[in-house]
Length: 421
Image 1: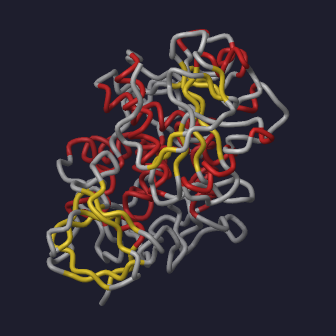
Image 2: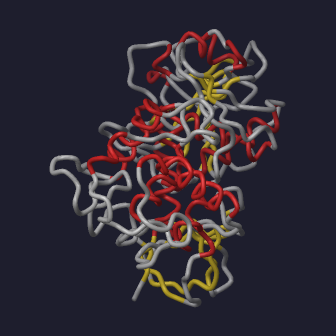
């Protein structure tokens, strides 16, 4: 039984059972409740008095640590039965609800889980929002969480709500079906088929933006918010995204998902909307919009997309529509056809977040205390060095939110940089 080659730091904990008593067939993701480096996580698991450990840990910078080899059972989930069959992963997170994790850590988690699955013959990840299906591995469910076995919030709502997205991303890397991988709780219908990739949606958004103030990284963050919230709700988040494009037709941002003006794209109301129907932040608004999509859509989304009654709250003509797709502001009876047109256009779009209008070269200032430089654009590539001076660096190419350094040292995650004017 092998271990992950992605590991950058190893400190084996004495808190383990060797060997494990079940073949690896499950993934259990935890949150650390602290933005801790992999060395710090290792130190936490080092004393025997701690009586706790995990197989792997991921720091906020995306580095991966190993504390218990895969051949052995970690002491992580308050369940010997689960830990004997699961690879357990602690992910650095905020210390308060919803225990959010950094983008680099999230991306590294996807790469690590995909690697674990490949080496252990797990052909597809299956997630369920139904606890009984998880703990009994019904319907092929092979993802569990700590809260299934103890009165804990772990892995926190941020990661819990993204388990469907994690499964979809890992399955794409495994070459498994790209159909939504969540198994619904009783009475919940999964709608539609494959999600449009976030990068494709991001590129589509950038291509249709008459006043572009949104870079590729921020566009993909926004698209991913829709997809991940949709996965958590068991519906098509990409369809909600297309609805939003149709409603506003334009977006104004300052490099992230915080708007310089409110709009109806899951963030607030467009001019002419009814007062009191805005949201405090993008994620809250997107979640509300997707919940409405879930409430009013039919099972076959592509044949009969949702018509949300909240459209009546926005004055017709208060915002332009997506150029060249829906023409004049549509009456309610035409929304289904127009949303479908937007959806099909996004699905056919061949670009991505890397196809932003950025002109090369340009400079960025590193904001992270330690930012890994990798051989390629992703956490699956080997680390060549690390930037620790928070200096200014020149970018000559972008791919999927990563920038290639002019020096030739490698690629850095642009999520931990600020673009210079």
